[in-house]
Length: 480
Ligand code: BGC
Image (tube, rainbow, N blue to C red; front, side, top):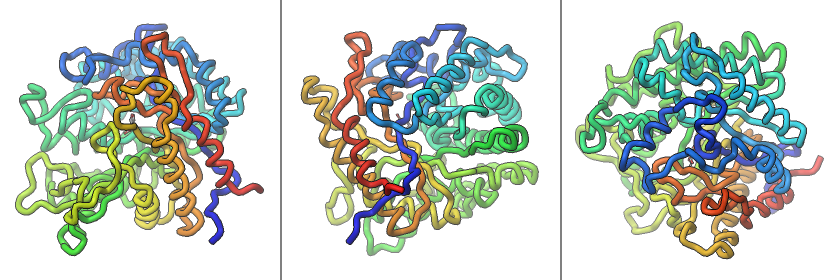
């Protein structure tokens, strides 16, 4: 059988996010984000670290661009720090020209290097002042107006040079980790041993609704005022992992897989493609799930120019009997790594949640494509950590064969989805260009194709995977 291929203009590169790499948190007028304040609370970050220095990328833009060039990247996905651009965050607060110009120059420099920028507006780092001023994402009316204003400032500065905008990165993670588990900023949860405030049974659904409506408004603004002049596309990026039934002979586990996907992906995907939340969510959550007003529905439905897909792994899904817990976010299911027969879904990595399963990637590409009527898909993140990588001596760490194999298998699965299943996948960004601040796990978990030596001035050392990805795409992308 002929080898699966990808189209000649397939866009591939690497991804990062502002708080995870930039550092320079007090430079040029930047103010705190909720992650700066969250990291200062004892016990929240595994190694008690923060993004204060991170990879120092704010000061090393030219190094990062050189690195991207040297490993053959065609594209780079990065996010903007809202509190650099509008330090206090709000629509009546001053714009910080220095912060804004930093990104204008960065985009110009990427373009000059022949690298296509993909810009994410919100990768979890809300200006802390908005959290304090009105409760951040919990206050839909204020948040939507402030986010839309921030988006406008960004479009005015960048729309001429940027062809791909992403409004929100993984609203699921914001809502669940930030408002149900309390392990991400702002750390709210019903669990009083974790945080004194929060209601995991209600707040995740409220903040997700705020993000969806804010996304809709930003997209409308982009389409009305910027797209006609500059072209370009805009979308949201949703995370989602594959699921297999824990017991494939139990219809309840088979049904649980579908319900779990509706809770994880349909939660945000269905309103954007169909105009409402999945019926399974309404059934379980009833009036805890917000209703779309007619105006909101009109603005959210149809608000994706492409489907931004973040994907890492797969799980076995087992149904839970009985009434769902008040703060259940899974559709009353359990995610497991081992099935009824005792088979593992994938190998272990440094991240307890991440068990690679490349065929699951192909299956999920099909699931998304079928559910949402074959949208163009850009994979905006995919990658892996390695068990024990941080403890290896540098010479061994640079030979990251496990990660090389991961990319080989996942890129192959994506090419199969394109060639054999006719899935319209047009882009792929590997997570991540650099080892970086892995949120609550601090710097102990590395996801980079480039080793960052945090002890010796954040120097960059490309791993084997950094060099190999280009060859993988060379061999799989069809020549004209
Ligand atoms: C996030 C990244 C994160 C990665 C690995 C994704 O959910 O967008 O910021 O570093 O997963 O955990």
